[in-house]
Image 1 (cartoon, helix red, strand yellow):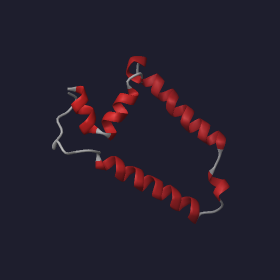
Image 2: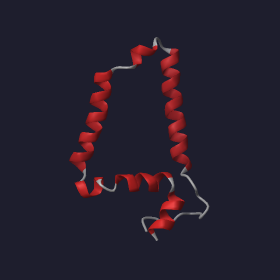
Image 3: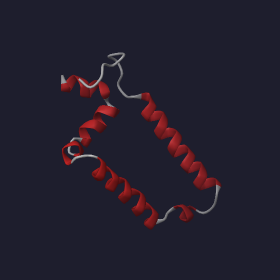
Length: 87
């Protein structure tokens, strides 16, 4: 087991939800408060950001770890269900 949960009734890590809500809220506020929508959509910048992130993942971790990435994401989002299935 990777960690011991504080409570068995934890269904979803609340910090993940808070982080997503705050991030999307601030980005949406910035888009609608600061100009036209097409100013914020830039395909080359998106390609650099996403491609760079994926490249850094492959450079930082062995392929055996990256194959388990969906399992780790599920564990981060749904710790209760993942822990019960893993044990």
